[in-house]
Length: 111
Length: 113
Image (cartoon, rainbow over all chains, first blue to last red; front, side):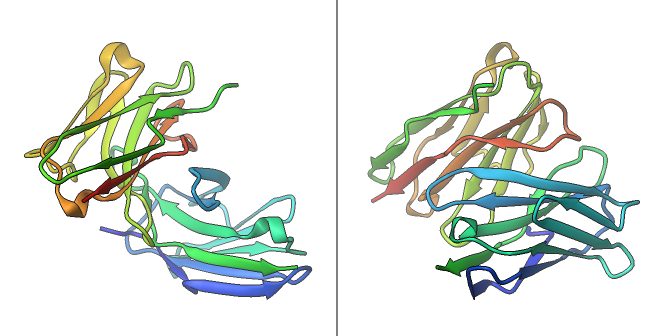
C-alpha cells in the first residue's frame, strides 16, 4: 500500500519560477525522504528530514515537515529545465524501517 | 564510488516464461532492496535484505517471485511463470544500513506479452 501521497499529480511551470509539491502520509514516521526520478532512470535521493525537524535546506531545495498534520512539502526555488522529473516522497515507520513511496508529482519546467 | 548496477536493461518475454534480474549493490552496503514500479506509480517494495537475510518480503508474490542474495553481495530476482501484470520496471537499491538513504540502479524494464 502507498503510505505517502503527493499533490499535485502533475505541475507545469516556467523556468525561474518556484515549484511546490506536497506529501501527506498516514502513520507516524521516523523520517521522511524526497527522491527525484528522471525519465527512464532510477531514483535519486534529494533530502531526508527527521521527525523532530521542521525544516531543512539543501541548495535550491527546502523541505518542511508538520508531524501534527502528517504532511511535508518540497520547494524548489528558481527552477531550471533540468529539474523536469518525477518527485516522490518516502516514509518509514515500524521496527524494520521499510521505506514506502507515494505515487509522485510529475514536474515539467518549460524553458 | 560506483553506483548500483543492474542487468539486463530491458527484457521482453511471453507470459508463462521465466526471467531473472541481477543486481550488484554499492560496495559495503549491507541493505539491498528490490522494488517494482508500474508505469505512473511509485516504487513498491518487493523484498528487503540485510546482508544475506530477508528483512521484509511481505509484498513479494511468493508463488511466482523469488529472490536471493548470495554471500550478502549480489542479488537476483526471478519470476516464474510471468504474467501480463508483471510488466513493470524492477529497481534495485542499496543502503549502508536501513536508516540511510537509498541508492538506486537504473532498473530493468520488463515487458510481458
